Amino acid sequence: MDIVSDVIGSGMIGRGSVAPDAVGHDTGSPGTGEADTVAHDPAAHDPVASDDVGLGIFGSDTGDLGAIDTDIVGTQAPGIAAPGTAAMSTVTEPAVRLHFGCGTNTLPGWINIDQVARAPGVSTDLDLTDLPYANGSVDAVLAEHMLEHLSFAEEALVWREMARVLRPGGRLTLEVPDFEWVCTTFLAAGDDWRDFYRVGAVDHYAGCGRDLDQRWGILQTMFFGNQNGAGQFHRSGYTEGKLRALAGALGFRDIEVRRLFNKGGQSLRARLVR
Image (cartoon, rainbow, N blue to C red; front, side, top):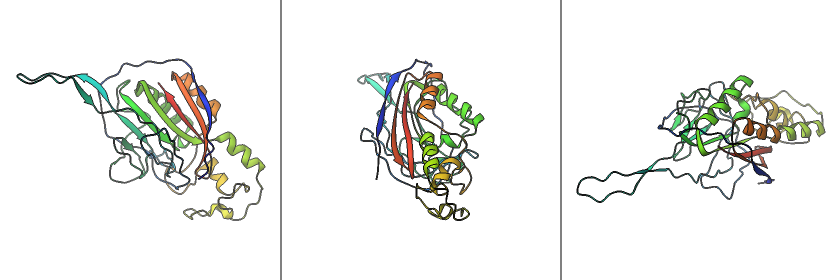
C-alpha cells in the first residue's frame, strides 16, 4: 500500500454557527463500485470504506478507504433524579453521524446512506440535497469518493446542507480524486488507446489496465467514473484550492488537507471543522 501523506496543514478561515437541536433520522444515499488501495489514518478510531455510490443519480466508488477520526461520543444532558433514588449526573445522548455513499461498507454507530446499494443497515431513501435534520444537530459527516459524483447543481445543494446540519465543532471528513494530479498525470501519459472499455470487466480499463503511464486505462475513469452501474459517473472535480475556498465560503472554521494514493490514483483527504 502506497500512501503519500502530504499534510498540507490547517487554518482558521471564519466561523459559522448554528444552534444545536434535536433529532435523528435513518435514511439513505450513494452506491457501490470498485475496491482499491486501503489508506489508514493512524489518528482514526473507526474504520471507513466507501467509493462509488449513488444517491439514485449520485454516486461513489466503494472500496476500502481510510479511517476517520470519530472522537465524538455523544453530548451530555442534565439527569433527573427519580424520587428516592440517587441523582444521575449526566445522560449520554448518542452522536448523530452520517455516512454518505457507504455502498456495502456500513459503519457501526453511523447512519449509513446509499441510494444504490442494497445491503442490511443501509438507508436508501435520503435526499442529500434536503436533509431531514435540524440546524446544528449532526456531529459528523463522512463522504469518501462520493462528492465527485454530484452534478454542478447537486454539489451546491449538498455542500450547503452539510454545513447547515453540522453542529459547531462538528466534522466533515471527505476524500475525492485529486483533480489537478489527474490532469497532470493524464497529459504526461502515453496516448496509446487499445480497446473499447468493457463495462464490468475487472481491471480491463480499455485494454490499458491500471497502468498510470497510459491515458486510456484507469486514468480516464478518474475523469468520468468507471460507469459500471447507476451512480458510477463522475461529474465534479476537486483541488486543494477549491476545497479550501468551499470551506471558507460555507463558514467552516478549520480545514486540514492531505494527499494519499488510493483507488489507483492520488486523492485528497480533508477534515473540515464547523
